[in-house]
Length: 403
Image (cartoon, rainbow, N blue to C red):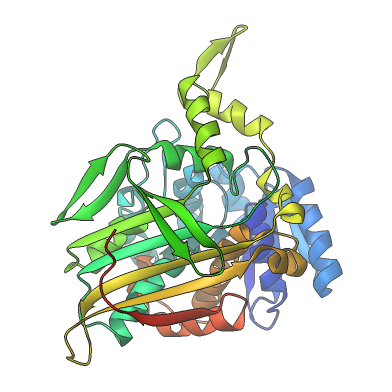
């Protein structure tokens, strides 16, 4: 039995809170806060209708550290689950340190004024969290998160070493919109338009954004174009799987998405530096976010499936030579909406956030300091994935992937 404070009332926050309510034997008291309390109230009402569980709601500007500390001290949660924007990671960590409460997030810190996300800022908190006797668990979403756990499960149960790793993220869903993003538009577009980076030969190699495209036939979805890009789990996996010779991240995008994004880039709408308009400074990307469809609103119209997984090649654990394994989850948008009122992109992040929080509050995973999810035992997490809506499969491939 534990008390949890979730910060962030987007689609991921909605899924996490719904799933926590469905596991009231673990999360006995659920609290939800965001800048807009009406969003929290709408989620709480849905949770009450679907599960009968009451969720307490609050208006909170998470960048106001004293206000966040005061709310934490008022609620006294076992853990704070940060499902707000990556810009807010450090201030929420500061509040948890001050209040002496465990912390969890799904995405690493990114400065507002630079499209650059990396773990160094959060890893720098390790000694302070250790000295405070509390735990920070980083990256408990799907990617990062489940893909990292998939990798470590393969290393524990199938491969003695991992030579190459490819993470494949396919969203085969169709929401019927000409252009929309499946999670926060500002974060999504910053991520996609940043230069691609992959790990090779003991260093990161940078290439132009969206420059490398490969077609791949995804089970449950079909053939899709996927593009090599940078994602933060490459950084942590390169650290915790030091023998890797190469690690890459791939994400699928439809032709219409690429066409619209190219036009938006060409006319300056993806810029993150302020411009002066009618005497007022605005950030073009933030304005674009305001006019695009709210990702949480797409659930009712989205059809299709996601397919996210890892292909790893290395020395087999049983001594039988080099082998390649493909471990993945396939998730249905309509089934996710029926269960929680959210589409699969939110579901595949919100469920692992709930599971990671369950690992920490039950002391299945524990430690003082800042930890990435790769440092934890993958087995109990993998078991809960099967139990709570994200079942996974693993198969041996004939050999390494050729792309």
